[in-house]
Image: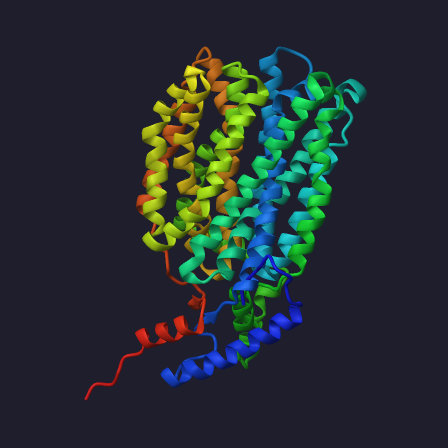
Length: 512
């Protein structure tokens, strides 16, 4: 059922026919090993389909972080365009406050899109979030400046940031669920790592474009019109992502869940109503109620993991360019160039970390990343504080090595926390609550704390350490899920041979 590729892909109808023949052959082999095997016991994935699903999901994630990265890297310029009054610090705080406001509605987006994805499917919701994200970003690039329309300029900025935030609320939970439900159990970490590859590609694309514009246009042109160009690119990118997503089938896990719900074989009126209750108009409310009443311990664990992860992520990838420019007085282009080098290095090893998490487990990699931030935050910022390019690069590298352990593992670990019937909704709600409270507010909180503590340049290190400590505790409390089926889903394997081996391992020979 799953896959994707770089070569010319066969038509969806051909994919489905090939997969049907593949499954018939597999069931014939498997039943000789175990006559009691049911059709839904094991999913044999198609790697081409998996790869296409990964590309479609990762591109949406790349767009999300491209959008948010642009705003982060242009924070100083946006502050001058939309909030020109007051001191430079006030303007920057206003810009970061508008950055954070999008995160306030992310939980609402997660609470809406997540249960909707559990009700009507992952694919349809991910197409909708892609459209909304692209439109929100495109419209920001079209807003007249404060000098042109005054008060309405920041009002429109906040409005379109809210559109971005609401749509993004359904993006990560859906994309990570999409990949996790397509990938075979033993390669979920590897394929999941490409979702975060999308994060880094989005950030790198944003930083690269901003760097190019800063160096070629100059400060005056950037302030007048140059800052708009990166936002306008979102429209064409959104159309590409939408095309990729609508060409995919629904995930195998959701198809099996849907079939079990709608064709469960109930005969009575009560049984029939129960079978189709997930399609009723009250289903989203019921889903949210089920998430908070039945999944609350795992939801709290998810919030702790994501909160720690996002503080460290936003600190390094969103806040650090502003820190280098505004606090250490680096040239803006120099700070972005160092960050670009850091992210390029992370992309080179990200899929390897995903493979390591498949082999050794999610917990060891996550614990290494969280503990790394706790131990290395102070040394890293002391190096960055020195100001020389080698010292700054060394400090960024230490932080980057800790972050890549989280980036390469988290997108496989989080979906496995929840069962199939509430996976999209639970993950979207938990993830976005954490991002709203802790991730998106990171630049604003650090900037405000530094202002309170007389520009103490070590404040980001202390804040990062506090987040990492919470992360260490959360990782210690989670269950290991590597190489195991997703809860509520059958085992998923990459080949018929692997499926037969699994059946043989589970089949007990008769003893006489």
